[in-house]
Image (cartoon, rainbow, N blue to C red; front, side, top):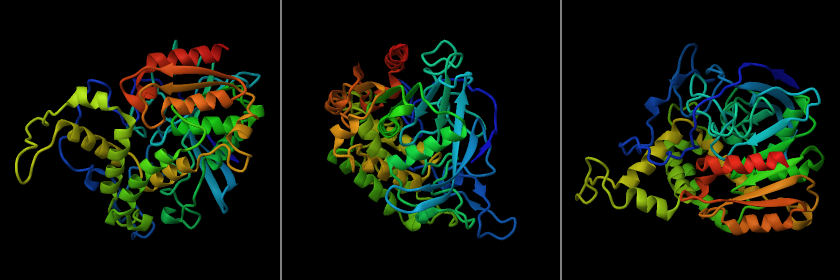
Amino acid sequence: MTVTDRHPARPDGAADTHGAVVPGQASGQTTSGYGPTSRLRSVPTGTASRGEEVPRSSGAWHEGDPVGQRRFVDIGGLDLERGGRLSQVRIAYETWGTLNASRDNVILVEHALTGDSHVSGEAGPGHPSPGWWNALIGAGRPVDPDEWFVVASNVLGGCQGSTGPSSLAPDGRPWGSRFPYVTVRDQVAAEAALLDALGIDRLAAVVGGSMGGMRALEWAVTEPERVDRCLVLASTAYATADQIAWCQPQLLAIRQDPDFAGGDYYETGRSPENGLGLARRIAHITYRTETELSERFGREAQLGEDPLRAGDRGRFAVESYLDHHAGKLARRFDANSYLRLTEAMNSHDVGRDRGGVEAALSRVSADCTVVSVDTDRLYPPRLSDELHRALPRSTRAHITSDYGHDGFLIEEDQVGEIISEALAR
């Protein structure tokens, strides 16, 4: 395993939410497009002539882009749960704080579906957005780098430095459609190999929300001897039929975009941003609440537009809001990664091949904190109730929010208090 220390700095910066406009913030773009390909820089490709460039077809990070705060570890090969093997796996990660002499002050932070390793820090070269949990990590904050050594990686199958569909396969071409099916368990195995390479045997805590909560819980089940505390926010022990159903139209939207090219679009100069943008629209509705959208937008028209005009009608303000988030994601994410990570979420079931959910959770020795958002329609509180009851050692916590599933990102004061209490136990 090779560790590449690409940037020693410890970033800190302003807050952001993963794909969610901060309450009261303007909805942004008023064009109906999804972030045109012309906004994506040109990059050399494996099939281009020397010096030739084609328009970038993805918002993924690529070799040659600014590294920012990323560091990299080559963990070698990885056997996959459902068969097959990735022969060369690289994991991108960031750290904050200092590992103490006993190596027992480590907190692993797990990002959600379209997040990345940039949990805290400013936007800048290599990081188009500020840290997605800035208010929680930093001096005097709930996770203080003066006390804790914080590690956050980009998930296996992602698009911000770790091995995924947009990265190069051993033959020098982008993986594209050839990238294998990966599960949450594969992703945790890759993270465990990362920590092994860093000389970290034990976690003081692993914390994550949504898809990150799935990985946090899988850590506690798969590696019980390595995890002291586990915080699972707005997540579940298994993907439900309702969650899988919401994912299906998102996957179809991407696959049916003509520019998707079966997943091999990186060298075409075209981007499946229309399909990715539609997927984001569908998902974003599930992340918020009817109350918030109604109170925030009502039936207001977008400024300067008339949604009741015959023919080429304008948009309602809520439509402009969804357009904004569609374009924003298309400019910073990759369609293939969206597919692979969504499929990994659908695979999530801690009870698979372990005798069921209760049997699997009975092996957890960590002090767990199970957190739900009262208005979350995608991961309703009853799923957290089930998880809490099945865990041997569990504290139940609640977030009150008008913002639904995204409350675990937006309600920073409540989340910070929950994390502080868990770390004090």
